[in-house]
Structure formats: structure tokens, C-alpha cells
Image 1 (cartoon, rainbow, N blue to C red):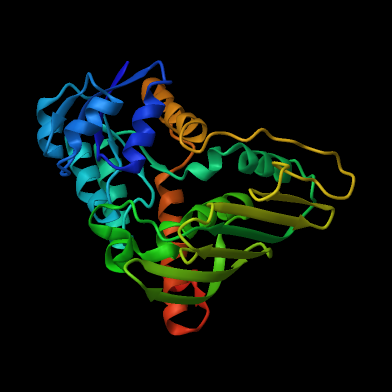
Image 2: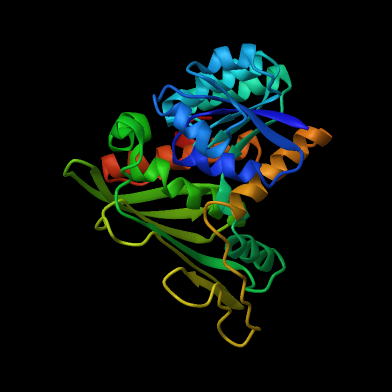
Length: 332
């Protein structure tokens, strides 16, 4: 049984706290948060957990074997390093860090101390996406040619101190939201050679951004990622994809009734939808806890998380310069 110390008391922390209730080998025994609502958070989600105002104090004083980091991106590196130095296994929400330098430091700390570490690129655990990966790997669409993904929403308003609207902290829509699709498409099609980005942004209390990123993969496929924080407040969160190869295609759109479509008579697939706040996150955390228990390496490696950041950094640089950016020019 793993005793989890949860850091944070926002939306993602609530999602993780609820998910751990469905994982037999894990229990949230402590919560640390700077937010004054931490007591109310614990009372609602994990009433038996101890409460701390300081994460490192929790790591030292509480009975925890795992630290789960659900805090704003700039805090990820120091929290992961603090946990690793204490020999505590760590799960960290995406992105792993705000910069490539910080990401490299996280990898160094977790490898040097030998703790189990995993970054929460949860899209791989959504059934519609996992099924697409399975079918592409099985050759059902032939050689992938074009990979289009959408992720559209209103600006996030739930972050403490409106931190999402501060691009220095959040990285904006490309770093915080499009990174889901950057990781997934790399998982499907391999390493990215170059990116080209067009974006627009404005502020009205909250940062609004809309961006389109073209990706050329080293093995030839073309990716197209559209990400937006520019939709009206009451707009439903939308994701979609269309993956086409020389022998078929796969389509998914949350605005449609069917979960997954296989056009062209290749056989219909109806993958049941899963609750956003439970099933994929529970599967992700259950995998991490199983790795901790069994000593296995997580499916999502530190290098995977680093490469997702590298793509995001390249996309941001391209948006700012108006020129294509080669991944070989970004990081190492």
C-alpha cells in the first residue's frame, strides 16, 4: 500500500484525490497546499488525510511514500527535486517543467536518486486515443500520412492567482494544452523534425489564445494541431482528431455521437466514452502505483515528457518568429 502525499488543492488535485479512492494499492494520507481553502478541500475529498501548508514539511513529517504534484507548472521542478532527494517516488502533472533546463534538472534528480517518476500525459489513457494508437500500430490505416488534432476551450479561469494567463508561468495554450497532442502524436508517429506555428492572442481579464501548429515528423507524416483558449465561456470543451494513412483513416470528435469512426468500411468501432474526471486519470495513476509497487518503469518516460516540452518550446519560438523551427535547434 502506497501512502500518497498530494500537493495542491485545485481542479487537478481534486481529480487525483477522487481517482485514488478507486486504486486499492494507494491512499491519500496527506495534502499540502498554499491555498487557504486546503482544509475545506481535504474535508470534501480526503477527510482522513493530514493537512499541511508547506509541501516539504509534509514530506518530512507525514507518513507518505509517494508525492503527487498537482500545482502550477513553475513549482514542478522544486517539488519533484525535494521529493526525490527524500527518496519519495513522484507523479507530476504535465508539463514536467516550464523550461527545458528545468526539465533536464528534474530528470537528473529522479535518475540520480533512483525514484520512480512519471509525468501525467493522460491523453494516452483516454480510450478513444488509446484505441487509435492500437489500430495504427496494428497497421489498420497503413502508413500514417496526416495526423490532425484539435483541443478547444474557453480560457481557464480556475487557476490560482490567474496563473494560466501569465505566459511566463503557464507557457500559454501551446505549452499547457497543445502539449497533450504533441505528446500523443509523437507517441503515434515518432520524433518531430520541425514545426511551424501561427497564433493570435489578446486579453480581456483572461489570456485568450488560438494557435495552429504544423509538425513534420522525421519519418514523413505531417501533423496539424489546433489549440484554443479563445472560445466563449459557455462553450463545451472540445477535442477531435483525424488520422489518415494510405489504407484508411480514424476519426473522433466530442461534438459527434460516435466515439470513434473508421470510415471506408474497415469495420465500425464504438469505444465507450469515459468520465473526464475519473476513468483516464484513474487508469494513469493506477499504472504509476503499479510501477511503484512492482519496480517497473512507467510507460511514460522522463524522456517522453522532455520531448513534449521540446516540441512546445519550438512551437512557441515559431509563433514568435514567424519561421519554422527545427527540433535540432531546441535543447539537446
